[in-house]
Image 1 (cartoon, rainbow, N blue to C red):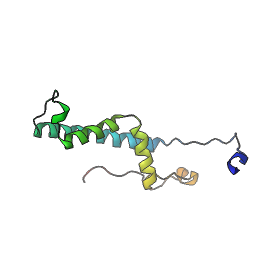
Image 2: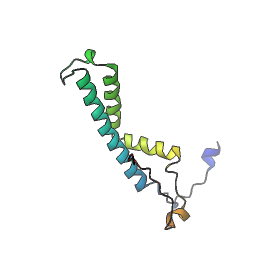
Image 3: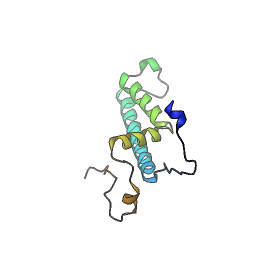
Image 4: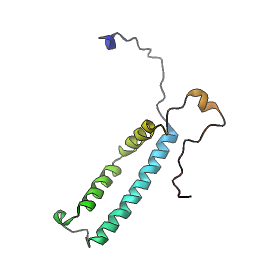
Length: 114
């Protein structure tokens, strides 16, 4: 019953928005969408599938890719990616002192194969 006895200060503002994290998660989602499109095209070509093929003739690989793509297409996937990045520690919440420093460690990972 301790939860009901909490004295919450209603004047406290909490800013949960993280623009950098949202932009990065959106970028990851867009890259995933492109990658899945390419893989689906490859799988269609490999199995000579046209867009009118019956679902029973689809390969397991194609069905799996289609399912994953439908999940990634959902707008909520951005939130899931944000949560994954935060939980991984790549986008841990910054303290206010870190936000104000001019020189802070980059929070970004390079997607390029350089």
